[in-house]
Amino acid sequence: MVHWISSPHPISDIRDWSKANRLELQPDFQRRAVWSASARIMLMDTILRRIPMPKIFLANTVRDGSTYRVVIDGQQRISAILDFLRDGFALNHPFTGKNKGKTFSELDPETQDSFLSYQIDFNEAVKPTDEQVRKVYARVNKYTVPLTKQELRRADFPGDFLKVSEELAVNDYFDEIGIFTPATRRKYGDVEYVSELLAAMIGGIQNKKTSLDDFY
Image (cartoon, rainbow, N blue to C red; front, side, top):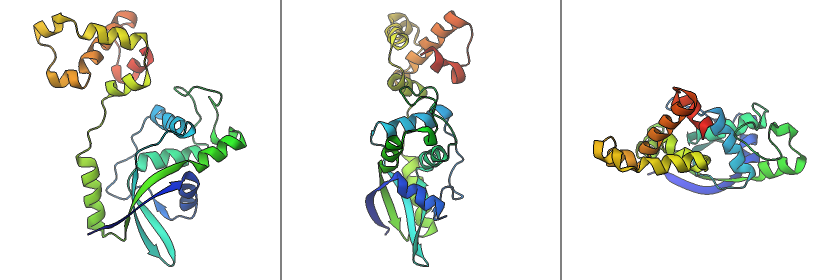
C-alpha cells in the first residue's frame, strides 16, 4: 500500500527542486513532451490569472538527507513552467493583456513574485517501489478522457464563428442523412465538421490541425 501526502507547493519550490537536481521530469515510462506552444502559453496565463489547475502526482524518496521527487503525472505542466522561468518562450498569441510578448525576466517584479508564489496542489507517494509508481501512472492516465480539440475551442474561442457553427450543426438535414452519431454530437464533432465547411468556404480547403483555431 502506497502512503500519500497531499500538500500545496509554490512554483518557487519546483524551481528550487529543479536547480538542485532533485526533480526527475521524464522517467522512462513517461511520454515525450507533446504540448503545443499555445497550450504552454495558456498554462502561464492560467497561473498569472491565479486560476487553479489540476493536481500533479509525484513520487518522493529521501536520499542522503534530501528529498528527491519523480513526476508521475504532470510532466507537461512542470516542463512548461520551468521553461518559461528560463525565458524559453514568450507570452505570444493566444495570450492577451499587458504582458503579451514578454518572457518571464521581462515581467515586472511584482508579477514575477505573483507567478513564483502560485500554489499547485500535489499528491506525493512516499517511497513507492518502481512497480507502484508505474501502476499509479497507468491508473491516472488509463481512465482519463481527454478533451477533444473542439471541446477546447468552445472554451478558448467564444464568438461569432462558434455561434454560427453550433447553430448550423443542429440543422435537421444532418439528422436526415445520418452523418453524425450520438457519440459524435456529444463530443461536438458535428460542430467541428461544420466549422471545417465554413473555413473551406471562406478560405479554401484547410488543414484543421493547423488552421481551424485561427478561424475561431
